[in-house]
Length: 287
Image 1: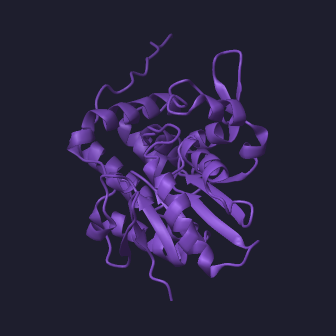
Image 2: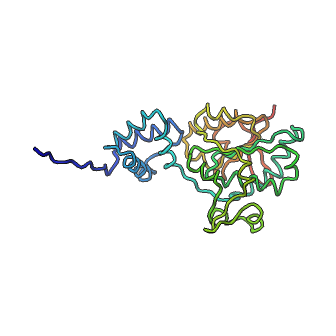
Image 3: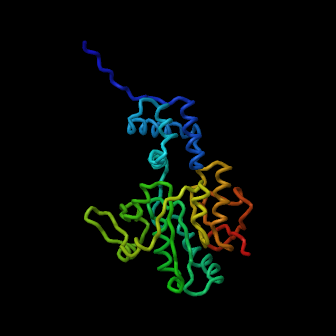
């Protein structure tokens, strides 16, 4: 006797309870805090992952996410949630501050040839760390006297892969002068631009979750951290914890550059406020 075949129907909505469980899980794993204001954005990402994983229901998907020991599904869903709005020379006044004010202070404590460590966190698709490298090559007179190390980290593995590939569309490079494009980029047949190989090889790219203290502790003796527009996605608790982790990663006297709408003074009392002609930055007190 033949039996009727049933067709699995994908869920069309996310309940309040499911939304809350998902947001709580993501917060505990990444520090990213989402509320009702982001409900539509989050719901669409959840339903997309339900479909792509072949889960029968949102509940079964949440179980898969929670108990996936490989970490691959968490990686996939985090990649879908992160916003990567960036371009070359964004907020370039901070790069000017780096070359004219911050690094001259940093190297007073160093001998020629010693490392100068700069960390871009999060680095997104690479525009920021490459901008730092180009700016210093063109604007910091002592760039060849020290061993400049640029580390670039993000929680999103897809943007890290794009950063290492180093190919950018016209929008990403729109603020760059023509001479910078000619000197540091190769124009490709599809009207995109690729960073020259020597620069691509000069950046150390690594995946780091800023809310994971063990991962953050793997980076140490950093002289300058660029952490722009990441903490706005955290709540007060995870924001303070991330700031404390950055404090521990910095060498004594090291600096943090935040986004223009962010203030370390409202996050943590650990840092001194430094007002330079080009920018306000935050310093771990020297010993």
